[in-house]
Length: 242
Ligand code: SF4
Figure 1 (cartoon, rainbow, N blue to C red):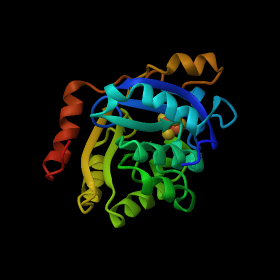
Figure 2: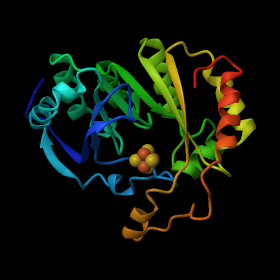
Figure 3: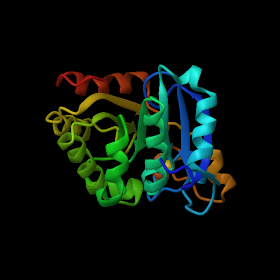
């Protein structure tokens, strides 16, 4: 590990329970190449913001929580952590040196030529598939799903443990035909340990307003419990773990 490599940090959550197994130190890195309509962290998207920290400073901070995260670990999230691959690699190396489980929470949008070294170093990849097909992925995120799907293929080839995440947005991804196609697509990947279907929420809407950006999903309501159950059933019927 080279402790002098620096990165841009959006924020830190020292007792995260949502981003990987157990209690985790979650490092949110600044910058994201996507523009998801439902982004709950729009202030994390600019590549020029955030606080600059060295990998050594981050590791020192992580280690102050070691007793709490010993059975969980560390998650690099964002923004998009793979947009700062050199920094991510150093922190992941630090986690390995200190025997801390590491996870990368990523959309897979960064090309593998840049992202693969960090993926190789992580114990677990939380891969957020925004939409399988580009007719939806592009209007929803501004980008194609090609890099995300290539990332999943890479994880399969390298036997990297993956949790799939997929946000269900009524009128967009919450569509039974699309969910059936996604579930069918995921069936052949033995690297997938778990699939998390997450309900769309509007907790970040106020941040869009603060940034002066129009939030186009104002009138979209979160899915009902019944809609979430129906979506999970589509995956469970195929033997997928959700
Ligand atoms: S990938 Fe995450 S941080 Fe980036 S725009 Fe989408 S929701 Fe926001």
